[in-house]
Each structure stands twice: as structure tokens, then as C-alpha cells.
Length: 391
Image (cartoon, rainbow, N blue to C red; front, side):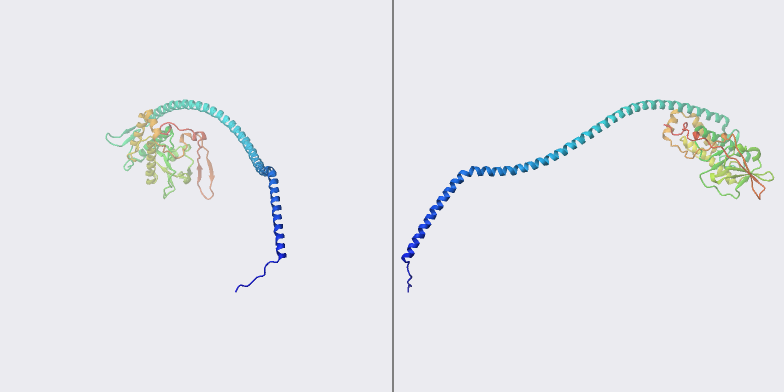
């Protein structure tokens, strides 16, 4: 069943009409205001656009100003760096100019030095040639003073000044004649080494039949007696020729004893009388080693070390017959094997001083005979001549 509703009254309808008319008036007012606003906006639109553009330009200008300020600072830094680089370039240019001047000066000095070096080489070559000729003459004179000849044809036994010297086998021979031959050999070897300016590894003291040799390299061989007695020493041995490592002790009864100083090596005699046999044989061995050293310095091979005079004769003949070209070849390719310091030759012992010490509780007195040392100029004198490695 449908329920009935109450309808509008007349007064309600009137109010509704009034409200509707008010709404129409408000709509017309709205439309008029909107139309007026649109007209105003159309009039002010260009001005607003310019204001917006001005704000945008102001922001862009602010950014540009900041960027310009930054770039200005960087530009100032670049200018300062450029100034520093320019100053550095000026300094380097001045240094290069100075170096160029020094280079030209050094180049001129080098050219002059090369010319001087060439002149010095020519002078050295001429001097070396004359020196070799003179050495050859002196060694030939030594061979004439100490002639070495075969004792018998077809044998290796040679004589020196008509004194036979066996090849390290001395049994059955006269000891005095052997000692004399060894003394001649010592003097010959010493003079050859002196002329060739080769310091011998085992220094020799030539004293005719009472010569001796020293071994500064190996330790001294122990002996039952520290010295050896010789009744001929006072007559034969010149005291001025003894080196500073040798002491002469005088005892009551006229005995003379030679005592070697172990600080400079062992002393070995080159005579068999009155000494231990093994010391004498070892001394001959050292003499042969000196001959081997001289031969090796000239590029010569030693076939048998025991052949004293044959090796020495071979060395002398090789030195006399060697040409200057062969000598230069030896100097260039043969190493200098002489490494021991030079020792003072006995010819330089022109003066000596003796000191006499009294020992309490003993009836003997010791006479120490020193030797004058070689001068510094002789010690550092440049060595030329046979087999010294000069190029």
C-alpha cells in the first residue's frame, strides 16, 4: 500500500522561487566578475610575462657572475703559473747557455787533450822502443858477464862462468863450487829483475858463494836450529849488504850466527856448507820460482822448474831476440804477474848504522844492520820495459 506524503505549501513555493531568483542573480554577478577579471588579465598579461622573464634573467645573471668570479680566480692562478714558468724558462735558458759555453770550452779542451794524448802516445812509443833496446843491451851485457854454456854437448847441464850448476841434484858435487854458481845465478836473476823492473816474489841477497833468499809468502819452515853457523861469514859476507831482517850475533870464540827475523819471512841459504840440507834445497826451489816468474812475465812457459840455468838461458835469449812488436804484444796480452811489493836492492846499501846492545847475563852482543828504505819516487815510479803491461 502506497503511503501518501505531504506536498509543498504556497509559502514554501514562494521561498523556493525567491531562492532560485537569487541564484540567477549570483550567477550573473559571477559571470560579470569573471569577465572583468579576464579583461584585467588581458591588460596585465604582457607586464607579468616581462616580470617572469626579469626574474629568470636575474637568476641566470647571478649564476654567470659567480662563474665569472670563479673563472677570474682561475685565470689569476694561471697568470701566476705562467709567470713562474716563464721565470723558470729564463733560468733554464741561462743554464743551457752556460752549459753550451762549457760544452764548447770542454770540447776545445778535449780536442787539445786528444792531440796531446796522441803526442804523448808517440813519445811513449818512442821511449818504450828505446827502453826496450836499452834493456836488451843491458841483458846482453849480463850474458857476457855471466856466460851460460852447456857443460857437455847434448846434455842439459850448463855452466855459469865455467862453474857447473846441476839441475836441482847436487849430491856428489863440490858444495863451494855449487854455492859460487848459485851466487852468480842469484846476481844474474837479481839484475835481470832490476832491469825489467819486476819485483821478485822471493827477494834475493846476492853475496857470491854466501847468497840467500827470503820467503815472505809462506810460513817459516820449522828447523831444529833457529840459526846456522858459518866460519866463512866474517871473510866473505859484506855486512853492508845484509838486509834489515838479518841479525849478526857475535859470540865468544869468534863464532858468527845469522838469525832471521820471522816478521819478514824465513831466510834460506843458497849454500850447503854448515846449514841444514832441506833449507838449502828449498832456497834453490825459491830461486827457480823467481826464474819462473820472470819467464811468465814475458809469456814463456817453464817446462821443468828444476832446470835452473837452461830456463835462465832460454829467458835471456828470448829477451835479447824479442822485437819491439813482440814486446808490445806481450805488454798487451800478458798479465802482469808480479804482485809482491818491490824490495830494496843490495846495490843501494851504501851506508849502514849499527847499534850495539849489551844483554845482562849473557856473553854475546847483537849487531842489527838496517837497510835504507827506497824512496817514495822509486816506489811509485811508472814501470816500463819488458812485460809490464804498458799499452
